[in-house]
Length: 209
Ligand code: IMP
Picture 1 (cartoon, rainbow, N blue to C red):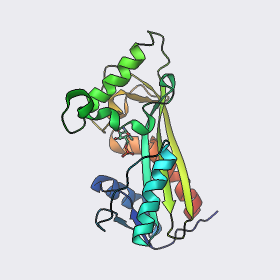
Picture 2 (picture 1 turned 135 degrees about the vertical axis):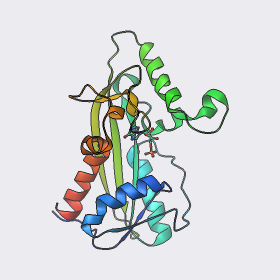
Picture 3 (picture 1 turned 135 degrees about the horizontal axis):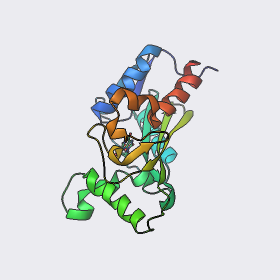
Picture 4 (picture 1 turned 45 degrees about the vertical axis):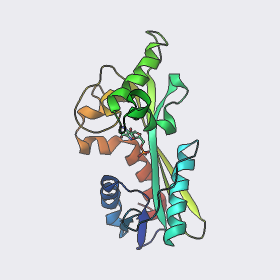
C-alpha cells in the first residue's frame, strides 16, 4: 500500500533540534525534505490532549494549518501497567522540578523516583510491566490525517542503570533483555524502540517500504 506523502517538504512540528535531525535522517531515503516548525517561527500549541494521539494531532494540525504544508508530529511517554498507564501523556511533566523543588527545569531522577515510589507503595510483588509509546501523526492542510502508534514493551528496574539515552531509559528494561535502554548504544536502542516501531508503520503505509 502507498500513502499520500511524496517528494515534498514536510514540517516537523518540533522545536527540538535533536528530534528534527533524527526524523530527517529517517525520512531522507524517501526523498522527503524536513524543516522544523521552529525554523518557520510557528507557535507551539499547548498539549492539552488526554491521549498521545490527541497531542500528536494537535501539534501536526497546528503546524499544517499555519504553514500550508503537510506536517508530522510525535508524542511519546511511559505507561506503567500497575499505575493504570501513568505517567502516560504526563511523562515529561513528572520530571518538572517545579513540582518538587519550586525550580525551573526537569530532573529525570526525580521522575524515575516518583514512579518507583508509587510502585513500592503497592508492595514487593507489584507488577513492574510497562511500555514506552510513540505516536506519529501526519496532518495535511486540507484536514486529512494519518496516525501511527509504536510500542516498546518492557519492565521497570530499580536502581537506575546506564549512562546512554535520555529520560526514563535507565529504569526501562526492554522485553527479552537484561540491560536497560540506557545500557544500549543508540543504534541498538533505535532498532527496537517505540519510535522505530511507529516509523516502520509510517514508512510501510506511506511509502510501501
Ligand atoms: P515528548 O514526546 O517529547 O513529549 O516526550 C515525552 C517524554 O517521554 C520524554 O520527555 C521522555 O521523558 C519520555 N520518553 C519518550 N521516549 C523515551 C525514550 O525513548 N526513552 C526514555 N524516555 C522517553
